[in-house]
Structures are given as C-alpha cells and as structure tokens.
Image (cartoon, rainbow, N blue to C red; front, top):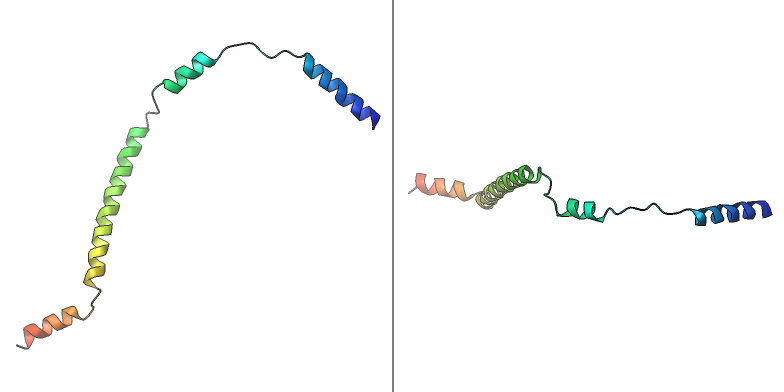
Length: 85
C-alpha cells in the first residue's frame, strides 16, 4: 500500500515541476469568432423556407378537406334537392 502512495507522490511532484506551454492564441480565436459564418447557411435557409411553404399549403388543403368531409351527407342532400324539386 505504501509503494502505491509513494508512486503517486512522485508522480505529483513531477507534474508540479512541468511548465505550461507559453503562447497566445487569443487573437486567432477572436478572428475566427468574428469571421464570416459558414457558407452553407444560405442554401439551408432556402430549403427551410421551401419546406415551410409546402407545409403551409398542405395544411390549408388538409383543413379544407376536413371541413368538406365534416358532414358526409351534405353532398347527398344537395343532389337530392336538385333531383327532386
């Protein structure tokens, strides 16, 4: 048990002796963050708008179909009134 604790102590002392690498990357990070965004954003927006338009057309069509079929006998009564005056 003492051997493993000694090993950890030696490892910790070596880690304390190491120096951190010196360098300044803040300018490069700031340039990258303030730079132009990805170029694929515009085509994705076009596709998203296209799908949104198609979904809205499908929604309007679906609502009109639901309203048309909400009374299934309406067309039968309409035809009966035309046939029998």
